[in-house]
Image 1: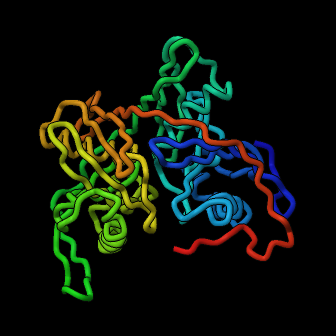
Image 2: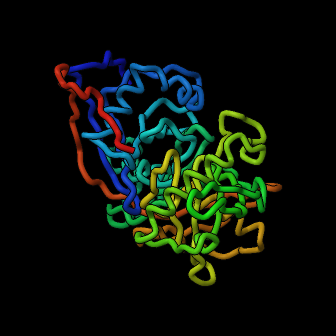
Length: 337
């Protein structure tokens, strides 16, 4: 992408999608060049003020909101991938995003970035900070019907890690969580462990618990990636309900209290790693708190890791030209939580 000296008066162009209800804003023009030899290096370098100003403009109010999500398109690590991507949210840059990978597959075909088979499968290969993933776009009669993304190797990191959550009114809450990696580190715990269920009426409580659990696991050894510390740290907390054999409902609270409206793609990969370790070998129907679904399965085992595939669909919601008036007193924006 050509270098843009970004400031008041400049334009940023985006194409917006949602996957399972979760927004995904793809920036197609208006971002300064992000240096680095790899996507993972570019993730580190994207925190410079000039570049991060664009993230804030698009993600924060009044152009976004506290649960907004999107990406910058960057060059891939090598010619083996079609594109590279940096995923962002209101608090910074993530290492993986399954719902975003699904949306990128749709966008690559719809925009002509990748030559597509109008009556079959088209692979869109994407370099993300956690590695190389593939979005297989399924089309029929020129219409995209679904996308299946094959994730990076996913694995169980630790089981039954004790947590203690301060609670002013009733004393500390004690429990345990499982930790698994699906491109990012997730802590998993049944919502019933706190007397709750994954329903909108409990969302405020689940957000508070997610923040507290993440804080309690800060710098925990089980949250360290085994080979690259840049991928370490608990990214999200997955609360889940058992709905029956091969079916769960979840809500993922990630970053600083953000809520994934979709069933969470990389979180589904982490759940599949845990379920596979427990002997589950079927297809998981993973439902979100908004009632949308992904399906997931393990397609390969590599030592202690599994290769998950997750299927969903993304839909375009708009095309935008964002500007910043140099006189605007709120500048690139703000968040209220």
